Image (cartoon, rainbow, N blue to C red; front, top):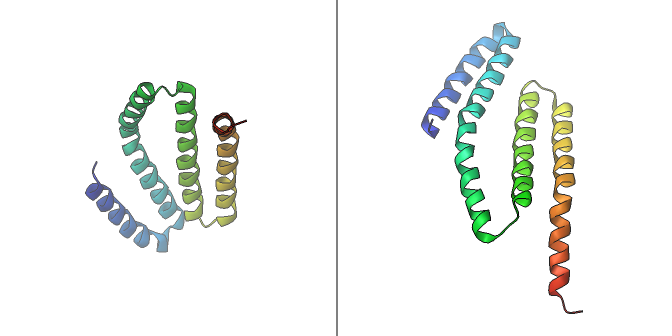
Amino acid sequence: MDILQIVGIGFLATVLILVIREQKPMFAYLLAAFVGVAIFLAFVGKIDDVISVLEELADRSGIPAVYLKTMLKIIGIAYIAEFGAQIVRDAGLESIASKIEFAGKMLILVMAVPIISVIVETVLNLLPA
């Protein structure tokens, strides 16, 4: 799917949601969630290509695989937390959406600690004693 198809589906879904919302608000929300999930799933397959390129670059540069996997998990957490928060926000529940975003940020921080410690150790080793 290219961007024109995604935009077309988005516009069509928006029109349908605006029409349906007057009579059946719950169906409008379900349609919005379904379209969002469908768009998300349409691009999951493309992520494999990106991961392959990143793995090749990591191998060529000598970066340990554990760091690449951690960075990819961090990126995944960020995208999933944002996606989940947007769906909840569409339902009008801003407070829960902000909690989802907060939880995502905390998970990212926890996962980033090993990478941050390696960076600090590297910098300390580069400084003259």
